[in-house]
Each structure stands twice: as structure tokens, then as C-alpha cells.
Amino acid sequence: QYSGFYFVPDRGFALTALTNSDGGAPFIAELFFTDDGALRPFAGLSNPPATPQTLPPAERAPYEGRYLAREVDPPPGDAEETWFELRAADGRLRARKIAGDDQQEFDLAFYRDNYVVVLDDHGEPTAARADFVPGPNGRITWFRLNGRLHTRQD
Image (cartoon, rainbow, N blue to C red; front, side, top):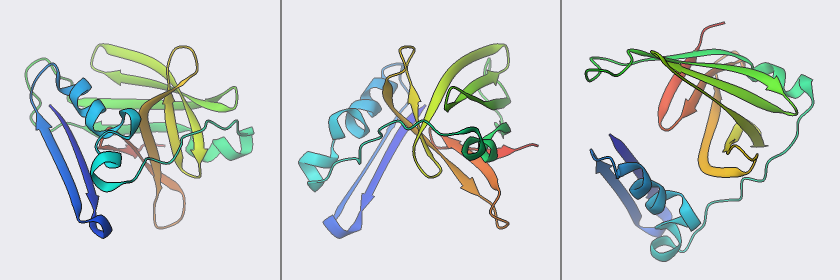
């Protein structure tokens, strides 16, 4: 399942796309992320650049930790829980995603306060972006990637 949503009230523009196909991920990426997708031709806007920054350890520390999302009634074969373990590494965050028996690692680079871009295997920015959401006390409480909110566990 893949989806995307844009809503730009000042431009009278909204776009949503929902798909349940194997080709859904590249379709959503083309509409919503790649070269500004539908934003430029239909709303005259573009995504702000996500230029990776290198942050010192003290500025990365508030984001490190374990984050959890639970799936309600997942399809057969899908994990009920997805964990992200985030730790500081080389001015960035190293993410380890654990979903059942599936594990993958990748880097996240900050490009502005509370916002990161996912880096590819060569350290280059991808179209995927994520953000961190502070709780009422100002402490980072949630990590959001691909529309899914993960709650901090430590």
C-alpha cells in the first residue's frame, strides 16, 4: 500500500494518490518527490532543498533512541511491529529498521531542525524525508517516516 497527499490551500491545489500495486512506490515517488513531481506543474511550487548538514554530537543526541510503530491487523507475512534504532554516526544518524525478520540500515542527515533526508548507499540524498516531533515537554517523542509515526521508547 502506497499513498501520497499534497494540500496547498493558497494555490487551490490538492492531490492524493492511493495504490495497492508493486509499482506503487515508484509511482508515488514520481508524483510527490522526484523533481518536484506534481507540485511544479500544478501549483507552481517546488520542494525546498534538503541539503545534508553535519551536526556535532550534542545536537544529534536528542534524536538518538528506539522508536516503535505497531500495525493493527497486518496482512499475512507483514510484521506487527516496526522498530527504528537511531544512533549518532559521522555527523548524521545511523538508522536500523527492524520489522519482523527484515532488517536494514541507512543514514539520515539533518537538513534543518527536526528534519532529515534519507541517504543512499553512497551518502547522497534520496527523495525520502523524515521528521522528528517533540512532545509537550519539548523532548523528541516521535519519529515520522513514510507517513508512519513511531513513538520513542527510551
